Amino acid sequence: MGALDGIRVLSFNHFLSGPAAAQHLGDLGADVITVEPLNGAFQRNWAVGNRFVDDISVNHITTGRNKRSIAVDLKSPEGIAAVKRLIATADVVMENFRPGTLDKLGLSEAEMRAVNPRIIIAATTGYGADGPYAKRPGQDVLLQAMAGLAAHTGSMESGPVAVGSVPIDHHAAALTVAGIIAALFERERTGVARRVEVNMLQAAMDLQGESITAWMNGAERSGPRGREGMANWFSPAPYGIYATTDGHVMISMSKPVDLAQALDLPEFAAFTEKDGFDRRGEVSAKVREGMARLSTDEAVAKLSAVGVWHEVVRDYDGLRDNPQVQHLKAFTELSTAQGSPMVMLSHPVRYDGETPAIRRAPPALGAQTREVLGEAGFSDTEIEALIASGAVVETNKMRS
Image (cartoon, rainbow, N blue to C red; front, side, top):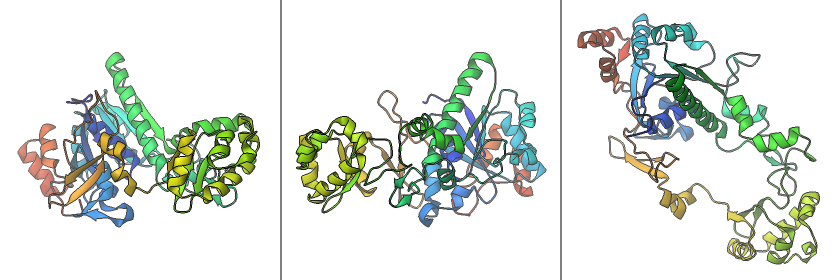
């Protein structure tokens, strides 16, 4: 059982943000049907690091669970007609194509609402449905550049740095889920079926809400990035990563007087918390010198003794042995059809202390085509005719 039991979602999504959003809805109990092209959606056939587990893309492992797959030729009249019959049975249609793509296929908002007036339509785009940038490619690292995330990451000494993951895609996914759930709630209260629009540009800005707001309201700064090891331009020193003799430690909120004691820096004994802002470079440089004399274990012990917030910088491998990660059961391991293990992140929200179960492993392409069409009212004869015409496929030997 899940909060969205009985809600049917048609997902035309590809790449990452849209499929991730659809997966969250599936985790919550929605019946998510991915409508894929005959050769599979992009994330099925392309993989981060070019890594496939028994021919299953790690991207499909990332965003494919708790869904059913139907493969349809959206350029064929028969395929579009079949999709419209599916829309008649759905609560939500999701898509993250460039604006206007579904219109060209005969699936405009007006055409979908003519089939199902109660349908909620959710579109995730790079820059919005219209405007001067609407047709630009919306890709995470490009948005990092445009929205200031890259400019505000790194150091003033070394220059801008791209974040080494895709945070904008994932934040856009979370915003899309929030918008869809809000629209479903409103529809049940008022009968109004909304169009939900999320764009990655505003998602990228929202991800930086604290720092952008401070900047726009005149917060003092000497540049968009930190200096002398500082992680940013707006926090008091020594907020940042510092090297030890055998590793790195992140130092968060702290008082200069505590650092004076922990790192044997008597020159800080008379510094106030305001000096942490006003004398950032000086404080950070001295902390860097003090940390460089210590091993990681020594630094952790000294910082802990005086209550300085800190954490050892670890790679992803450290997550496997992290006792809190283990306690939260933040990883879930399933087996492929061939028996190989595949690891995925668990749903990140708990409900009454429980994580939603994985009901379906990432499906093979078109694995549920016949099943989904049958539920939409197609007869066996109609389904066979669609398969014979090539408008849909039931399975496909492409990478899945």
